[in-house]
Length: 460
Image 1 (cartoon, helix red, strand yellow):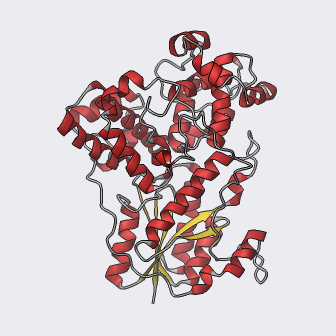
Image 2 (tube, one colour; image 1 turned 90 degrees about the vertical axis):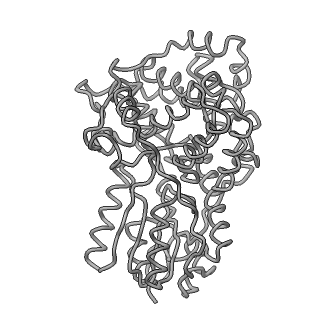
Image 3 (cartoon, helix red, strand yellow; image 1 turned 135 degrees about the vertical axis):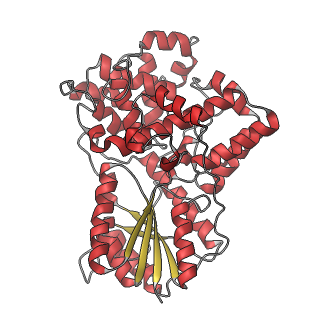
């Protein structure tokens, strides 16, 4: 019997996952088996051009917990998640051959590395005969439903928002999780603990490459990553539990407590869980979708009334979409040193950058923010702007170094928003004002007037 493979990427949920639902429908219609798979590439923990590891311990912990939650949800439906260790470009073709795959489905990701990966798999699929299908599904709005072609998306966010709102474009209705999943492939060797042990040590003894076997991603141990009680997103606590169930529970309590009504007034806060929605970690992992958030928010407004606060959540989701559509429009240009500008390449001071990463710049507010980031894996939107501006405009460092540090540290790292926001602050993206410098002294006076935040994170 043939198999349909769904490769989970940044869509770690069962409900409102069009690509996964397509895989289920195809497998059921053709009476094929279904194999859910996640591919963990250890290269993601290796050094990048700017940082000692591209994925830090907080991100690894969140990902490991989210994968565990996804596996639990699949097992409740009679399936499970196969975790492979190594490069997807080499592992997926071998897996497809091993389980006689007729089709491999995945979400589409419009970032250079992910597109290169997808194109390589597309070429392999053509040569060996299985179908490779990707689905765009990470945005709130469907690209085809925009009032302009996606490659003509206005570069300036305000123009984008105004055209979308005038046209009355709405989010799609979220899909329910599939009620029935096709059976797994019968090959028990995929889950072989002996092969898993070989994978943990690196290579298969027989073929010299990463084995095709279940090798769950390990969470960093507590002694390496102690819980951080000061965190504004304490993912080690049940209230912030990673995974789809945790996302739905958090969204439900956020709406039940009517916190959308106060969102606009509190969104620039620095301390505590409730100053912002804190939905971004689940959105980033794909444990929650933007249409799910919007559908729940519209139901909330229908019952409790709309407000400036609830509108501002829509506003923020549109910002998130704009960064995605900029990737579909501009692609690799967003990753150049000059970005979309014609300005000369940015300067860089490696020592100043290192002090910035460690929270040792000498400015109390900036250092408090960077310590919060390093110790907890989270940082408020306001502080992200402050520390990013300080790196670029006060320390005269390369914005790409800051983007790499955020990628390494943030538990809610999103490739689209991270790249877009850093370009915006640096004046190399779509900001009509040509960059944003935040005066750190004024920011401290406006947002931490009593020094509570600086005292909270004043020591490492």
